[in-house]
Length: 164
Image (spheres, rainbow, N blue to C red):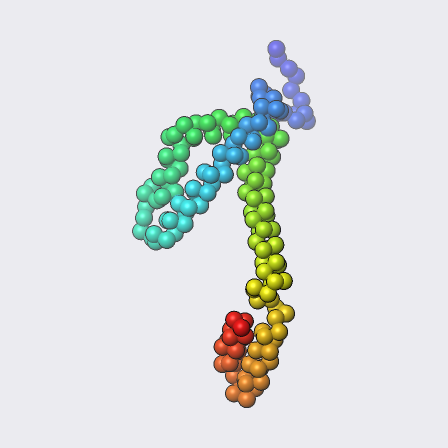
């Protein structure tokens, strides 16, 4: 049936993907993109370390992308991306899953490291900025530096005090 054209009406493309399917596809696509992204970063680092003189088609990144595109993972990822990008909610879900899960895991690991470091400092097993020996070493280095007129004692004194 022919509809009257209204140039002020917002035209949205007709898709058969409903919201639930789009969001679920966004979750799946985001989960698949996490390891693919890690592999891609590793390939980029490998190419950077390898140096110049490598053609773009022979780079590790290009070989990885071709491998993924030609594999079943690439086919699944393409289908999930297409469905996820049919709605704004699917796109947002894909981005949140892809970024949010690694960020949450990283925050958890950072919190564990901070807790262990604070416990170690409080038990005296690590050097804190309020360490008395560190303060004494800094004062002694400052005194010797004034006499010598340059900071040659700072590193040795502070390092020795930190290790004491």
